[in-house]
Length: 104
Image (cartoon, rainbow, N blue to C red; front, side):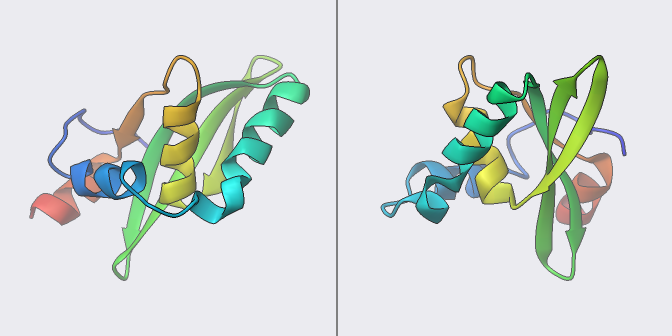
């Protein structure tokens, strides 16, 4: 998988819907994920909106652990919540294939 261009057009509505949500996101399950990864000695690297299949987005959270990148499958809303919760915020990338599908 290749992370695509950085841009706002394709993922801005998705990010906006997470940031302005009025209800807690998944019972703050992303906080549990952040705590677990940090406790196990992992370091968050970035988030990739990796796939669009049958009108459903998929994401991965990339973590550096013992010199290797581990990819954790996640719902895009949780992945973005992790990205904006971490200090500093994590970069959010969109795979080139997803951008091509969205932008036509």
